[in-house]
Amino acid sequence: MAVGLGTEQVTGGGPNRGTAQPGPAARRQRALRVPRSPKIIAGLALLLLFVLIAIIGPVLAPYSPDQVFANSPVPLPPSGAHWLGTTNLQQDVFSQVLVGGGDMLLVSFIAGVIATALSVVIGVAAGFLGGLADDLLSMLANIFLVMPALPLLVILFGFLGKTGSNDLFLVGLIISVTGWAWGARVLRAQTLSLRNRDYVDSARIIGERRWRIIFTEILPNLAPIVASSFLFTVLYAVGTYTAMAFLGLVNPNWNWGGILFYAQGSNAELTGYWWWFIPPGLAVALLGTSLVLLNFGIDEFINPRLRAAGLARRAGGRRRAKARRRQQFALTPVVRAATAASGKEGQP
Image (tube, rainbow, N blue to C red; front, side, top):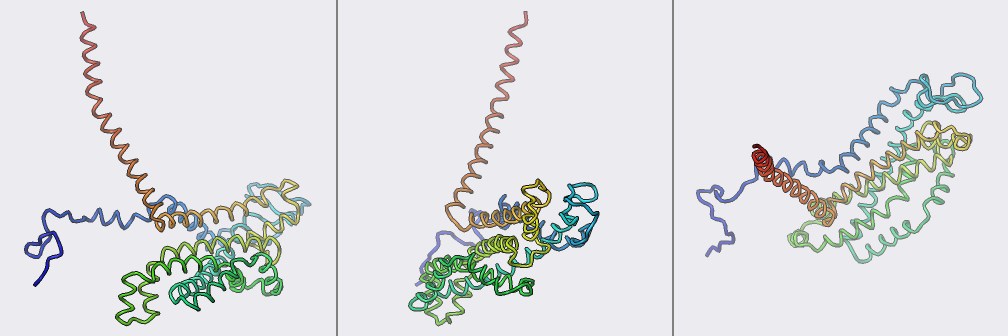
């Protein structure tokens, strides 16, 4: 005997007339919901601007970053010939800023990819396998969490020498060693909450292999967290690479941290040569701001409370705007009628 589980009636295989079907506008609105977040739009626009500068910056640079101009004992201020002035060696700062973004983004992207891959492998494996594997992998992540990152990086970069510090892939790999543990802990906690879900148990009962369950059932539900972890790691790599170049531990030539290194070495901040250190510092700050805005925007969709608060705030704003429009529309005839009546009473 068949038992009906639904409450809607279907006639002739078509949808019920009383049931509202989502139209193309509603589907398009759902599809564009994430990009319409102001934080995501602003962060993505800034990040794309820096990517564009990194790609075409060397072409747009008016001079070579190491080209020496007029013989002057002090850096020259901004002028028509040099938009951001010159260094103490009479090199164009604007050209150095345009050229220096490429290495920064490349090293940060390499470090973000490697660190995110490590955090996914270790965090998901620890949360899904459990037992002794979870204990060992969690202990490894905890060790890297409590380990002081800056002294470790100083030691590692000290072994590279000047030749190894020019290898951008190697620099990104070393930075990723100290940047994966936080993401692994977050992914482990989320995997622990997913491993006992009904759909995971169903896949386990029908005999699916562990790797297939992880890749088809666990990882798709962790995609927003993986994206947030990647952005956080890239942000960490931007700050770390800038700090290492500022300390002179990596090749400081023509990256933003290196410009700050040479400016600090010449006491530019004390002698008032602001055009030498403010532009690269502002570029690093804006790049970090773009990544933070993207991370906050993704976090609003990961966290149900933030998402509900944002939707409720937007819905409340729309309701207040509609109420004001209705109030103005209702008061307009009354005001006009009162004005007309007062005019008639004033006539003799």
